[in-house]
Length: 294
Image (cartoon, rainbow, N blue to C red):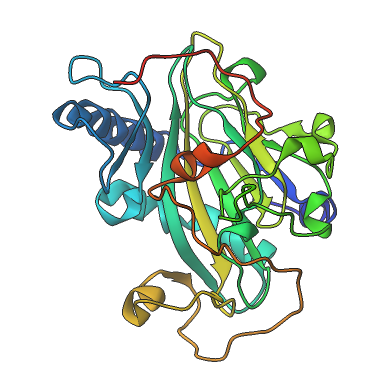
């Protein structure tokens, strides 16, 4: 579904948007499964292993900002992780060793209140032995400038790994925008119709603003790595590590390529999701309206 020119664009700019990757049936089933997950959030009042809740969430008005690891508990999202048209794109972008799913999540921005995500690099969360890694953003809704699309700073994947620690020295999963390390104003919004997919390099600086529109913006995110990229923080479950191969065969010989690394240590005091990590960030880039905490 992509050309050599598309691959070259990705290599140069660190991102790519491919329209109309998902077929209509799979998109419809994914949306239906997500609607059910959100409805079931009425039974919880605090963050869980599945739900990261928006401020203001109540059982009467469930408000979810993230579904955690949907591929592990909702079959359609594991099916989608193996969706062959997407995997073929990944094979072109990540190289010949194969493709491994690292993790997944769904970030939800409901109309007028979806939480922003501050500027960061995914590489800051999980450095590997090489940086042939990327995130796929599966657009479950149309993404346009007012509903808080993912934004990427072009070419930033070729630069340094920025500090993602708060002033007290703990990892916070975000860059301090007052340091002026990056021209955030140059960021490109990754917009498209539902069923399209974006791809951004693991070292690309990216973030997203609050949804200020009357339309939802639900984004399914998969993190994928080349099969020969091994995590520097270690492998907790070898069987799961290999089960997550969507292309290629298990190997035990990582490819080691120098890349600028900062370890996400000491760990963030608030665990659970990037939203929790970023609560200790001293300075913020994206404004959001105040909301009651439920």
